[in-house]
Image (cartoon, rainbow, N blue to C red; front, top):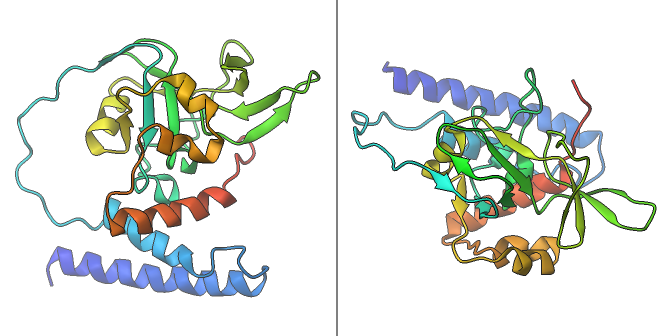
Length: 233
């Protein structure tokens, strides 16, 4: 057998074990709490995207253009690349020892809060995060990323945001090249902030271009509804 065939059999066996686990889990939980059988679809899609791709030709020698973005640039997350939290090497770190799944980047809108150069870390804030608290004055506090910022809260267009997304040098460029993130050209931050959280990705130019995108988007939407920050390791 070829290595390709052996890998395919191993993946198939793994999915069967995953399905057995999901069946057992569903028997102990309320109907609909694990996505009514969608979990195995998500695993298959993650495997196809990240593990089971056919061998590629020799790598291209073409060098990507140097990345330079100004502070205040709006970006949007893919509707398909962050299934099950995305590729493990793409996930932003919480700290030096933890790189948790990043479902929060599914159909996300982000803002660069410093200028970005290719060989420097990129500092961004999430504009589509869930509410995580409330201030004494009634102001709502939203999740902006896993890493605490120097200022405890960032205020953008009347919204308070806790945390930021910190990417190491070259990582933002890779995510842009892979399509996991996109630059939202021509989108103004105020337009995004004026929209409800659920509409901000579309306001930032997010579109489902195919049936495949729509299917992935539904899986990601369902996973995101069940996502939580989880405890610090």
